[in-house]
Image 1 (spheres, rainbow, N blue to C red):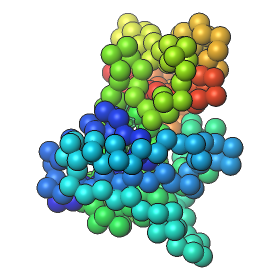
Image 2: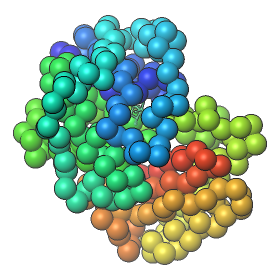
Image 3: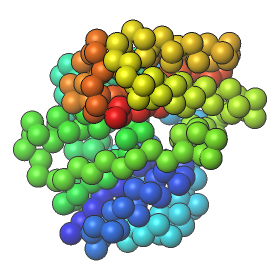
Image 4: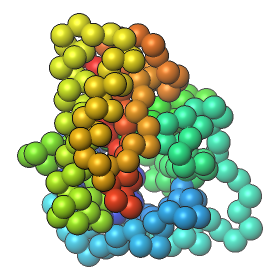
Length: 258
Ligand code: AMP
């Protein structure tokens, strides 16, 4: 059994949790380290995305990876490449709405990585919940037999979801960023208390985000996790997702209700 764990490097304990989960299920675990240019917009952070290859190799190996795949851009996109994978409609929702072309880049690179690794299984984090929806749809549509496994969000002790982009945060911003997970905790409490109206759940999330004036909402949404369509009434299994800028840094976080 071959398991693939696709990453863009700058590995942290969230990535390690995927590699560990993969090592429990498969005898060969390929961790890919590839900062995929096609999933970045023209004004995004492709050039300055953290690249920590040596530390990544150590972390991946310690977590149980048996192979590292760190291709060059020209290997993944041979000269004259014309083929892309596009999951219509879904790719324009949530992060796809804020980042046009992002999910086209993700779907394309994940397809290539699955083929290159001949993966029986591939492991992804719930952290990127919209990505999970896009990739599940893609795998079903393209008759891709690889089993997609989704692992829970790994957080710092104070609630902040681990992200390679947390490295961009100043100490002050790091503190401000706590409102994202705090907002989700409030949403979870309301949901547990029986509140089902999306307006009420989104309002509490926005209220918590607004306690930090330096944090700017990108989106707050309650959606069906499979279709990413907005829901007016929340049900267990729905995705409550948010994205916000903390200074220049765009962070995402989410909660699966119930
Ligand atoms: P990235 O390197 O950011 O492209 O992420 C590679 C994989 O790690 C994706 O499937 C992410 O969802 C997953 N991942 C990133 N952060 C976390 C986290 N805090 N907990 C769990 N998985 C994560």
